[in-house]
Image 1 (cartoon, one colour):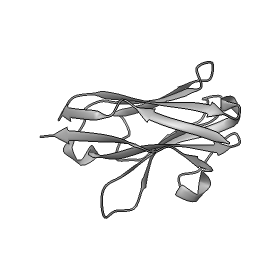
Image 2 (cartoon, rainbow, N blue to C red):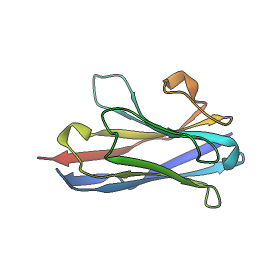
Image 3 (cartoon, rainbow, N blue to C red):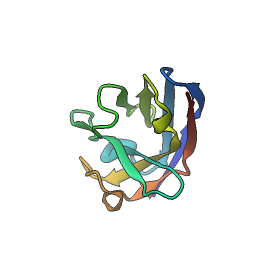
Length: 124
């Protein structure tokens, strides 16, 4: 089992930045690929970014490419999402997810564990 706890959400202005963190506990963090997803009410949860267990493979959704950066610190069992140049359409609940194995896909079913989410609100 892996427990995931997100933090760092909050209110930001358009053009601003936020940094999300996801702390993992339980099963060895370094053996898990990690991902970030987001969801707004009434819509499906959507892929944002993912990273392989050693950080050598990274993928982003087109909507965040060039603005968001995913990274991980296996010594701290933490994955980060640096969000720059925020837009109002980035407003959502952001979820951290983990998958047993080297790399994960972009689908919700690709992941084995989920955090509770953290709200990000971007004002115009």
